[in-house]
Length: 250
Image 1 (tube, one colour):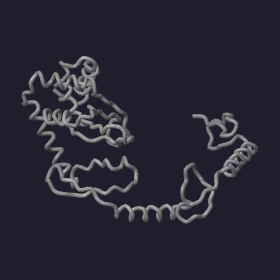
Image 2 (cartoon, one colour):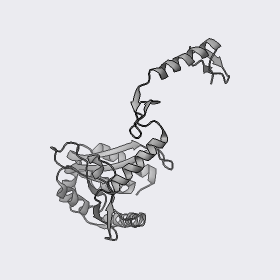
Image 3 (spheres, rainbow, N blue to C red):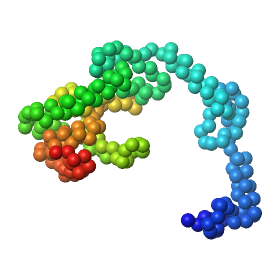
Image 4 (cartoon, rainbow, N blue to C red):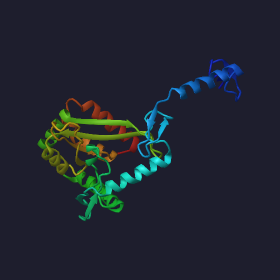
């Protein structure tokens, strides 16, 4: 691919040069000098020295000041009260730190005391999915869940940048302010988890989210309620076919 001059956009051909002439080189250098001259001066949050920012939003004059500030902040955070929780797998009590003053950080979704317990729980979920295939759920319950999903549910397909994935992520969720209803759905279909969503306005009601992130769990849940859906039936059928073609689910 042919390169162009970074100053006047003149074609350069196949070369390693960045500019077509010395004039463009000096003009580009003067532009960079003027931009650096117009940078704002700020006071370092750690040492108090005045400096010119190298990028918008810079808070510290040097990396060493940033490291000192983060170390002091971590010490202050460790003195804050820890939140007591119970591991969902081994029932062991563990504690969660909240390292930020942001109220949204209070909703830390730590459900297990260790990675080992989380891995064991994932294996248990796979066994629960096998039980779902054998479990006889009444037609009335399926219709109720389908109506709830039609009104409050969501099917999300997103792009991801994970190293070992093909670039897509699927999840099925239902959002509601009544936690008891979502827990009933979670107990009826032993897939997914109910969590509390972060509330940005204290005047708003707390909202809860029932979410399924595994591909096989989404497939089983949508197949369970698809015959009773009205609004989201076409979308559910498309996702079921997509999962069948991608993972060869039966």
